[in-house]
Length: 225
Image 1: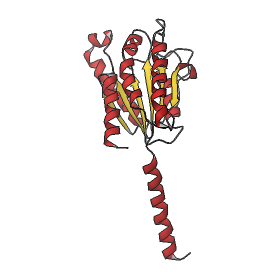
Image 2: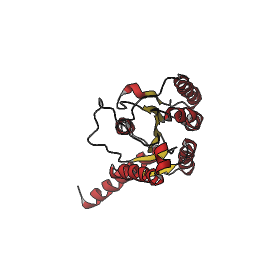
Image 3: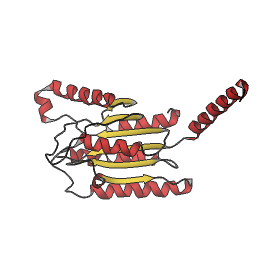
Image 4: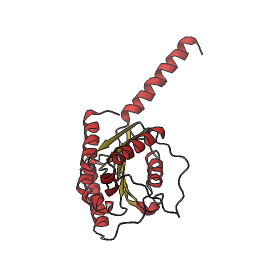
């Protein structure tokens, strides 16, 4: 191979890789809902906001909605996991089915669990999000971020969030926060640093799940990866 041919092959290879990148339009989104203790009611109130995310789903997008519960690293915590069809005319039907499945789950009055395995849920979500190619991978965590692991659930030794945008949403204040106001800010800062240390592409906190949904909508409107 001549030097000219070698340079030409490199250029064509780079153009090919760029073309593949441009063809990726799908989003892979995972929403984790804390259903431990009193936060289960907060998660229930977030259902309409999740509907906004569902309504934004396009062809070949994947949406997983799961729970943070006693032992979160389990398929048992998955409410819905759907890759939306390629045919645009089928996407609307899938949106309706996904939303109905989530509504059905939250009609159960006895969903609250005793423990809060946040890291187990994040590990499960990270593996789900990195399981397929996507233009953007997003993890939305709706929780008060008070982790109370069950003695029967092992803690993951390592979690990687490389290439995943993390949004902590609806981080409500607890009774303990009222007694110690600094504890709330310290808890948010701890999980922010933790996600960054795990390699997250970006980390932010929003007051409500609806605000997290709006962040995703803005990313889609702007076309940013």
